[in-house]
Image 1 (cartoon, rainbow, N blue to C red):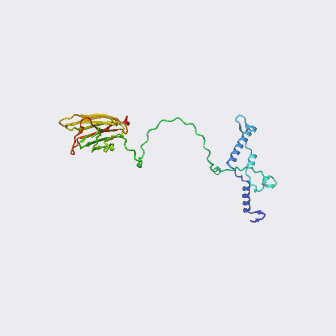
Image 2 (cartoon, rainbow, N blue to C red):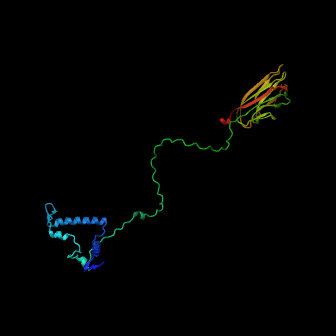
Image 3 (cartoon, helix red, strand yellow):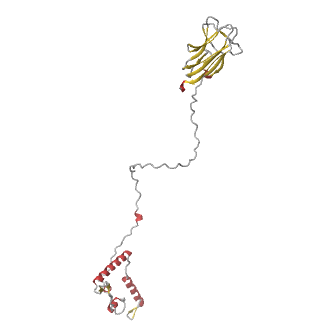
Length: 297
């Protein structure tokens, strides 16, 4: 940049103008500051209307009279124009510059202030139980489950039975006062309750039993037989001597307790006592079976 004939060059003037525009420019104002300035201007305008003598009391408005001096005083002027004096705060370096005071308003991002999640608190006491509601509708059937394992074997059926049927193929003549009738043919002997060696039935299931005895008499001989309950004769089968032999039978019912015995014996009186039979056919039979166990009441 050069100075010709004591006048500054055009480039120098341009830099001075730009510098003055930067210095005299209005500083940055936030929206908050602008709102405060608008409120301040509105309050000052209201005060001026009340105190200004140029205000019309009827309409509460200011009456403006344009003055040439006022208009000239408000025109923009450049300090670099010839014959113009710069404002005192530009020409006097010791004049205190009046800049508006602004306070920085910090903006905090609330999202970064979130702390870490705390520990769970202790569980509070249970509240009072509410009233029970109505039963809802039945839901759909679920899926069928898998087949379970086989259980342990159960106890056998406790139904109780007792029965026997025995016979004799050999004839017999009594040779003693009392003689036990022993059988040699086993027809039915359920659970072995009838002893073939002793000729006696032993009760293992208490209850009511039915018994029957069938014999074939011997001609010209007497037949005298007792059905015994333990050591007591209960019924008698008797046939007098005759010219022919016939079939005789006797039946009865007894209530037995456990370990009771039922058997048949011959009784020898004044006459010869005999029972007829042969080795091929069975003429003598003794039968018995349980009708009702005592456990059934």
